[in-house]
Each structure stands twice: as C-alpha cells, then as structure tokens.
Length: 251
Figure 1 (cartoon, rainbow, N blue to C red):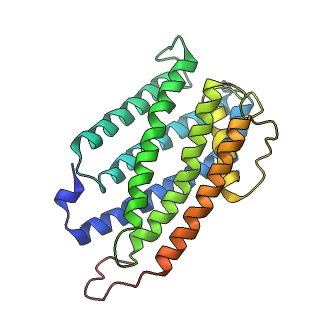
Figure 2 (figure 1 turned 90 degrees about the horizontal axis):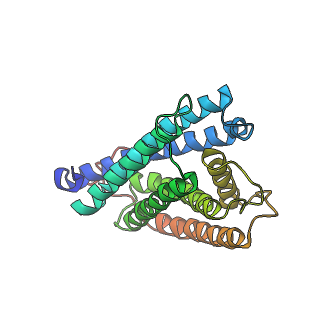
C-alpha cells in the first residue's frame, strides 16, 4: 500500500512523475469539461443533457479522487493518514454517486444543504493536505527531474480547483455568495471552479456582486498563485540536471 516502502528512490521518482502526469490530465479534462458543458446544468438539472453531464462529471470526479489518494501515497508512510484519506474519499464518492445519480433516486437526503456541507467540508482538507505534501516534494531535492515539472503543473491546477471547492463551501453556508443564486450541488460547484480559474488566470470572473468574503479570499488566491509561480520558476531554474549516471528518470 505504501510506495515509499516498495520502491527505490529512482523508482519512486518515476512513480511520482506518472502520478503527477495522470492528475494533470484528469484536471485538464475536468476543467475543459466543466467550462464547456456547465451551461447545460444552469438550464436545469433534470434535462437529458444535464443528466448526461452529471453522470460524466461523477465518473471524472471518482477518478480524480482516486488519483489524489494514489499521489498521497508517494509522500508519506503514515498509515493512519493514508487510510483515513482513502476511506474519506471512498465515502465522499460513494455517497455522492448515490445521492446525485441523475436518472433515478437511489438515496434521499432530508437536508441537502447539510449533506453538501459535510461532503465539501471533508474534501477541502484532503485537497489542502495533498497540495502541502506536493509543494514540499517539488521544493526538495538537488536536481531538476521531470516529476518536478509535472508536479508544478499539478499543484497550479489543484490550487484553482481547491479554491473553487472553498468558494462552493461558502455558497453552501450562505447561498448566493457568488452574487448569483445557482442551484446547490454541481451547478454552483462548476461556477465556483470557473470563478477560481478566472482569478488564477488573472481574468475578470464577471461576478461583481460576489460577497466580500469571497472577494477577499480571491485576492489571497491571486497573490498565493502568483507567489507560487515566482518561487517555482526560481527553484526549477536554479536546479542542475542530474548526472547521466543518476538520470534514470525518462524525459
């Protein structure tokens, strides 16, 4: 279960490179998918198109959750932490599928707001935990290896997605905090991630009536993401390539 025990140092670097790359790919898929198809959700969650979008997103979300846990195993031998994250993510994904299944009701929740609050309240700390381990990982080491490049891209996109989760969490506690009352669940989450990515990319999110709390947090996101880019560029540019006899990681 714990890769750091099973793999040697060079094998672990290759494994991290693969895991980072897989997460970047699924992140890009989720972002592109969310930005291009979220309009169907805003038109109503019961339309055939919205049900199909919800089904596809649920699949991607399950894959993303597994990849986050798989990446966490690269960083720590703490069995309690790894198992806790596994069971938590399994519970989040399983409950989400049962409650949000679009074609017929499998599990009915009496208080949807509380249900969403618990789901996102559990997910956000896991995202922060993985980000913190990944940042420590790419800023360690003496050589520039491919896993650090993929790791930088992974963290950058994860910042946008995790802040989107935070904005959605705020909207669950206080609906309409984005300035527009989107439907609870996937519609609001998709708009929250879009808002976060606009902040991350330096674009106008087009939400002038967002709450002061969200606007203030978006300032923190913008500063933090730019600081990360500056630091990571400085770090990676200052690292030498590994000697040929040590460069066992494929480019």
